[in-house]
Length: 359
Image (cartoon, rainbow, N blue to C red; front, side, top):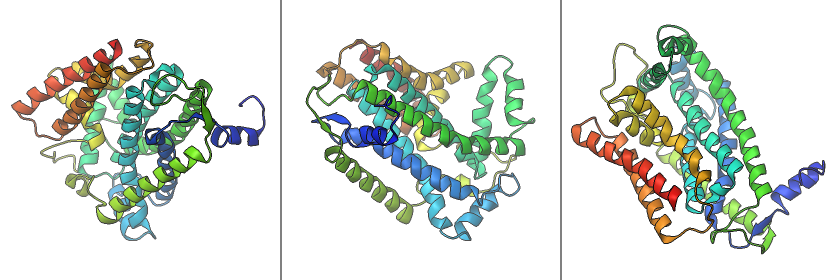
């Protein structure tokens, strides 16, 4: 398909005549829906760059100016801000579906997918800093300080900051990277798609079926239904609850002299933040937080069985429930009972992954 050198053949082979197993369900829609959301994020992001000013003295006011004075800014900015939550949520569902149906047997596609997850979280974090509210500033301060655990860490942190604290050079660097990373995500997404199609798609029963039909119109229509549902959900959130995913502290301009009483990240970071926070040792906490993502790259080393047994599914659902508990605990205040529960759930997170690798 990719060796013919014919652009029309590539497009038709990828989106029209692609042979697909006959029993694919709506859980196979997440990937295409992610592509649509990524496109929305890139377009709305480009529109926002035309009015956003990356400077610590004006960034907060420029965001307010976009929402109040720019034509359709009241729509574009909430779509972009809430779209990040939708994008990460869909990625988690997509990864969960891949683990449940053991799609990690396609090693290259899986590793590129893990890279997409990590880069997406990094891009979302960089974007969270740009409004320069209280939570934006202190999130940048806390997360960048984690880099101090590596050798020559303090010097490295100052290099990232461009000074001795989070300041104007830091914001400019974050803005530049936040602009560039989505295009890297788009490239990796295409690479992910190539590896999936070269390996051929699996199906809900496991293994690889010889009975296949063209992608269009049978599964293309399913994707369109998925697009419509996602757009309706996003627009409902934007029109009726545009600020529900935000933190009240971020409606105050950044003040380095006032620390918020309860610092917490966006909901899609909470599971990793819980692991970081519950470990008393800083270096071990950082290792645990990054390990929570890095351990996903180990799934291709699992036993080479494409079918999922009942025991595997039970462990998987326990892992999902545990991840939800970690997310909830990340939003709780730092109290002894929550720290203790967080430590138990953190151990279970890695232990249950080990169980899935063994089954």
